[in-house]
Image (cartoon, rainbow, N blue to C red; front, side, top):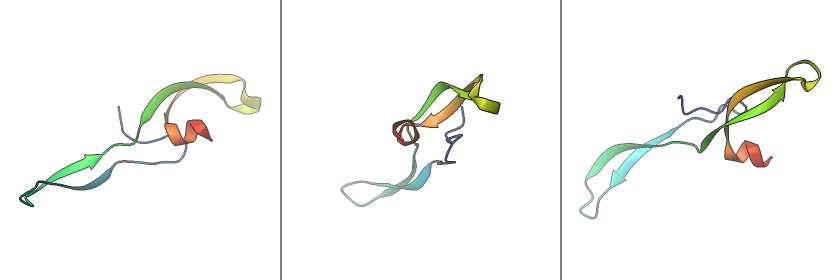
Length: 59
C-alpha cells in the first residue's frame, strides 16, 4: 500500500536517524494512513475505499 493520503496527498517525510555518537542513517516517517470506506461520487452515493491520513479523518 502506498503511504500517501488520497484526500490531501500527504506522503512520507525523509531524514536521518541520529545515534548518540551522531552517526546518521537514512529513515522515513510515514503518515498514519487508514483504509476507510467513504461515500464519494455524484451526490455522495457511491461507496469507495480510500487511503486517508488520520488528520483528514478528524477534519
